[in-house]
Amino acid sequence: MAGGCGSQSKNAINGKYVDAKSGLLTFDFHSGSCDFTFAGLTKECTYEVAGNKITLRRADGGVEMTLTRNSDGSLVDNGSGNKLIRMTQ
Image 1: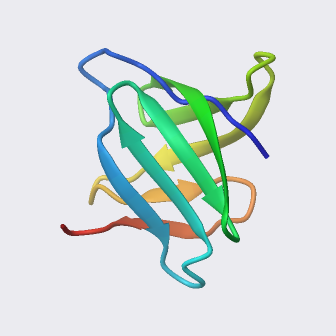
Image 2: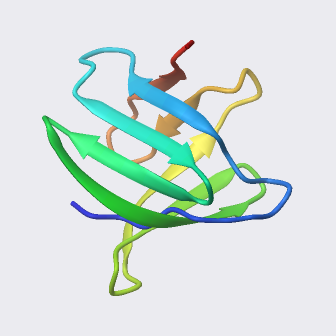
Image 3: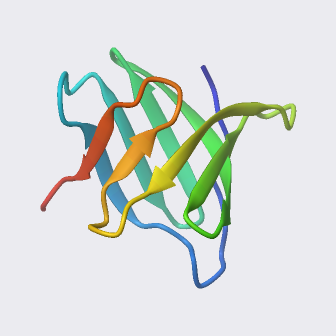
């Protein structure tokens, strides 16, 4: 489940997002990369932002998944439909 997350543009995302339902899926966007965690297993990934779409890429460049950024700042996993909310620090 590795993906890739990293974009230094004005559309870059920062912060930690968690699956609002289960808490098992998290994305920690930082310093142009993303740590993608599912059920306790973490992999570093890269990402690309195009409009409100975020594409997570594996190390081999293949697409792992896509997310949609909502106007309220939350994210949606397009594969499962699960909403990801930003965790407060």
